[in-house]
Image (cartoon, rainbow, N blue to C red; front, side, top):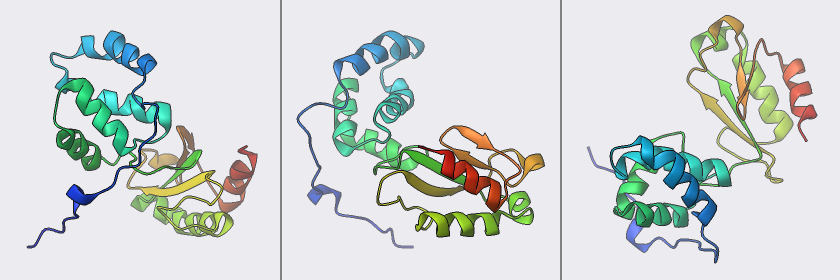
Length: 174
């Protein structure tokens, strides 16, 4: 089997003057995160989560800054960030909509719900609206099969969804 690779060595990284890993974030990491781990490298995942929480995604410049802060190779940080689906390396909308696509949710109307949301927002799964308000994704299971179909909007779980009640939820978001 051939590996599909991209030419990362020639990739251009968008940069901004101010760091993503600013002094406030470094202080938080040094006082609240690093003491819980035996080595700096062991704290990589929570540090990536902290960066993403602050900026709503993790730019490649931030990956380099994290690598420098932890004294590890930027490739190790990039490998970690690209391995886990929890990390966003592209900007996402203000509201991340994750619609469960487990078999239970599918049996309870997830397909119809997803189609209605796609039509309402004018995007497909994996896309963000042009106004950067909504990013639409699916999830394999959100662990609430007894209240299917379900979706997360950012970190809020919405249960027993129908196209009509989820439409009202979307309309209520500012």
